[in-house]
Length: 105
Image 1 (cartoon, rainbow, N blue to C red):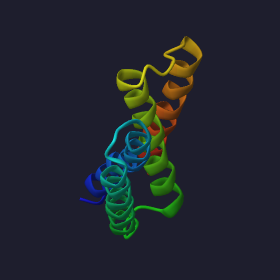
Image 2: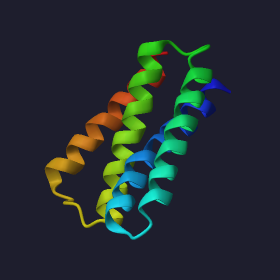
Image 3: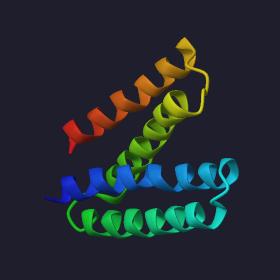
Image 4: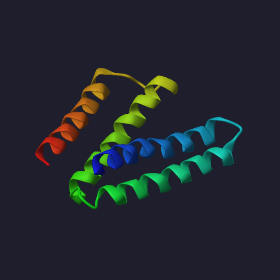
């Protein structure tokens, strides 16, 4: 169950940079700042729960990796961020590292 919490924590980790970006690009500044703060809190709580049985280094690397790659994908799909081959290959390396950490656990 800790792995489910960790994956959910990583998904909520995407929510806070998204909330901050939307607070800059829409007229709903404070609503999206609130989304960012709530996402941060939920993400942190879920990470805390996951770390009860998953080693801290593994949990943290996977948490930030999911957040980083997920935010990259959101940026490409919704904010016209660059989808250059180098960015995608770099994200793939992060995913390979996440899978490696899970398999080595």
